[in-house]
Amino acid sequence: MPLAKAAEDKLMSIDLKHRSNAEIEGHANYVLAVLFVVIMLNFLDRQVVSILAEPIKLEMGLSDKQIGLMTGLSFALFYTTLAVPVAALADRWNRSKIIAIAISIWSVMTMLCGTASNFTQLFLARVGVGVGESACSPASHSLITDYFPPEKRAGALGIYGAAVPIGAFFALAGGGWIVENFDWRLAFFLAGMPGIFVGLLVWLTVKEPRGSVALKEAFKPKPNQPKFKEALRELGTKPAYWHLVMAGVLIQFVAYGTAAFHGSLYVRLFDIGYAELGFKLGLMIAIAGITGAWLGGKVGDKFDRERPATSLLIVAGTFLIAIPSTYAAVNVNSVNLSLAFLGVTTFAATFYYGPNFALIQQLASDRTRAIAVAIYLLFSGLFGLGLGPLFLGTVSDYISNGNPTLEAEGIRGAVVIISLFNVWTAFHFWKAHRHVRMDHARSTDLA
Image 1 (cartoon, rainbow, N blue to C red):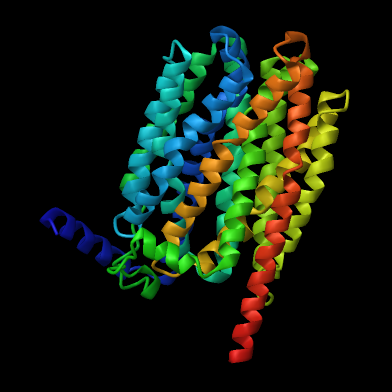
Image 2 (cartoon, one colour):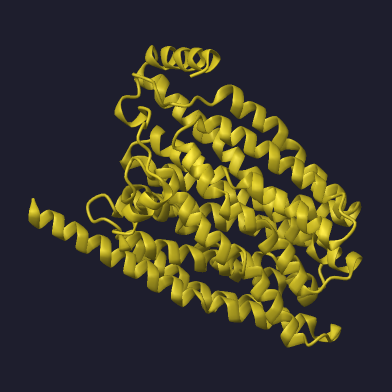
């Protein structure tokens, strides 16, 4: 180990060793707050393109299919494939530094999106955003798991997940106002700039807990990390995990497919201005999303304490309710009523977060926590995020058949069709619940 690295680890261990439990708990809450800001900026930079898609389409002469490629597949290609090796690194190296480097990369690439002059340049810049963001979730989830005990993890992950709709609010409200009053290029630059400063904050103030005597067994270094094949072999014995992965694929497929066209959907159906749309849409997503993520975490902590995975049945129910609410959202005549119905759908898309990721951390061993999240993100991102916007855009183009007067009907029909995949999502949450309960019953009988 290099001298500088050894000295840094020693100082960090000494610093945490002499802290009281209250101070350690306080730092854990501080870490959660900083990671909240990180994931908020993560989704701001990821989602700002959705409110800018229509003016980008008009300026560059793109099809809905190309919009789907730009918003989904371009981002997902490296966001998903790099998540696994980065997660393996997170199980060995300083996770705080990984997050700090990652946010700096994706912030710079977001700003570069504003310099693109054609589809190819914009596609490649979005690829760069995905490269940076690939490191965020596996390292963050692993860090939160070390800082919070099992009985508080769903709640902590629910709070972390609540940052997603707040990031979406700033992306939509801010992006909508900027594009209406200035242009879409400035929106990309202003979205990326704050991440440079937050990355520095993470590097300097968020402590890596491994190696601290004060934080005991959960925070000890992990010397014998499994290889990817070994991790797959271990996780392969847990069917509940793979049902959660499949549910994650479908959630991302529907949620990101729809979100990529939020701006286009409302501009075409209701002929609303970007500033008004961005504020109203962003406010709805923030309120419904925060409520869903927070309540989902609370439900997970309450119902899963004595009866594991019970909350997954409630999660499944929310996705079934999301189908008629999505249909209503695109078939009413009032934009405000439409947003209210879409709020029910948004609630479901964040409610699952706490129970889902708390169970993933529970199913994974201490040696495979970060890589379990990375594998989840690999499949859900590549097939869900990567193909969802492309699917919706392709269906929209097929329905409109190149007729500009039918573009509104094209996107309306595509949104309804993609929402039907929520039935499949609910099925996998139900199956995951069944497997966890059977495993729990079997272990209880053996005891």
